[in-house]
Length: 285
View 1 (cartoon, helix red, strand yellow):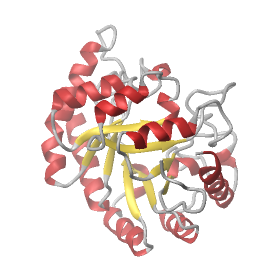
View 2: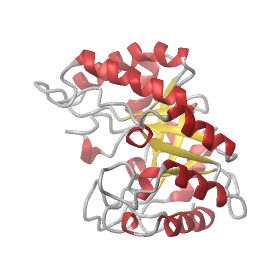
View 3: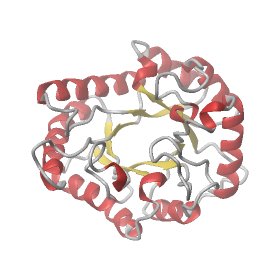
């Protein structure tokens, strides 16, 4: 297990931690200002959201690299299934557009949040079949552009409308089914902290298919399951045990902090958020 007490170069900022994934939240820092602030603090990588990038993907990627960092990822694909994915051709077109943006950024990973239950079906099995079909269709397009696709299982509270994919077991099963070398998983503390089977499934995934590890915390008395994530150390997740399991399965990439916090961290000065994030990463993760 890596020692981060005196070295946080493995730390990556997901700009959602500053509120930049939702219109009207956060301090509104530009991508350039975020890059500079992260570089000044010695972070190793940044992860952006598509709404921040616009037509400047190449330029933003170049600025990140000039600052001595990498673009660890891009959030995210469109929903691939569910009520917001009724037009299959439009879904694939947008999927490919997100791949093109990741390629222009030279982002290592494009995160997939799959979407909820397909209208007219019950349970998740039929929906997961559609996810498998659409990811399998897009995987060669992504591979040709050197983009990895990371299936991210979400906490079961989102199963109905945001992610019919709720366990790492099911995510690894999809990887087995799709059988593309550029399709793997992203492991987010917020979504898997409760899963007593997580270590077994991480070993199934292995180093070649774990594409990302996301840090935050689950507040015991959360007020909003989407927009009230905790800073690391403020909740009930066993962060060190989870990282030990992830690294024990062979992962050695960035640790990405992703905190949706409309009424706390998004209201603070971004510099303070970054400084606390670094301190917690070194001490509790």
